[in-house]
Image (cartoon, rainbow, N blue to C red; front, side, top):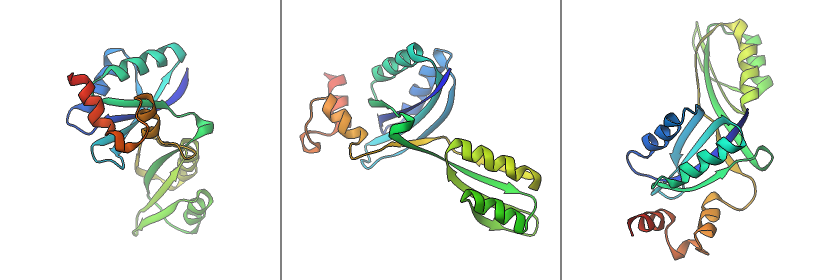
Length: 187
């Protein structure tokens, strides 16, 4: 199986996350990571979903996702055509120059220091985060939190642009993506 990252534009309304998550649950698919946040349009949220699926199953999931009424658009984020990052905050039990050197090597920041612990922050690709965690293990990892992946396509075109093209809208002045998706459902 292979990891696939989907960027999904959805209406910013209550219950959308639950409907999307239940779609995967009903079909027995596991979500490796899920990150949801606002977009440049307050009426639209963006989900970044990482799945471990093969081709046909991915096509089925995408088709079923698109059928949900609050889903506006879906784009698979290909690694060569997008930037994908995660956030890690990790608390370790010891301090000192060796810890500072490990953090520096990965481009991580020490965001909090006390006598008995240090909090390190890193924004990076998943494999870099795993490598940092491995190098921090000797310092005594006390606690960590890691976000899901977020991804953005390279180049000038946006996911909103692609959705407008698919819906036959040539520019943003011709209609709001979320409003037109809801209007189509309601008619």
